[in-house]
Length: 128
Image (cartoon, rainbow, N blue to C red; front, side, top):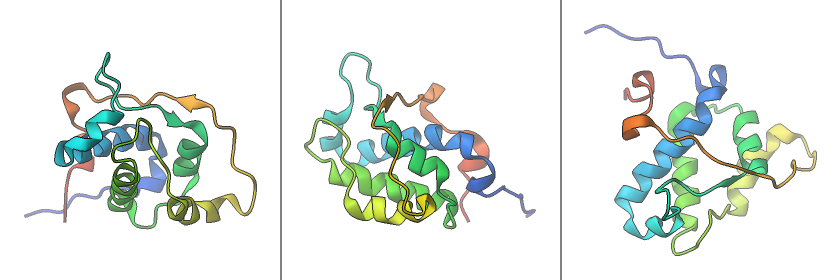
């Protein structure tokens, strides 16, 4: 069996929004109460504050894709029963070191892309 070199998440940050949506979809399948977060008319994930997405994009992700998946799951579980995605302070604390004490960016909203067929690019689905 051969090995495949998969670049670290920090080298392909542009995939973070799609992976975020994919992991949120997976989490909502495991936890049906999260379906309240999804917009009923479009069946798309909830909007994510721009400040959160900027934190996710700026973070170095030493734990790679697995760490992103865990962060998304923590966000989703903290949002159970809510009508919008909640961000626990410990998630901000985990992501904040990259900002070096600078104030977070604006709270504008960004819509997350969805995956055709609900799957991310193949190189992100491999597990060890």
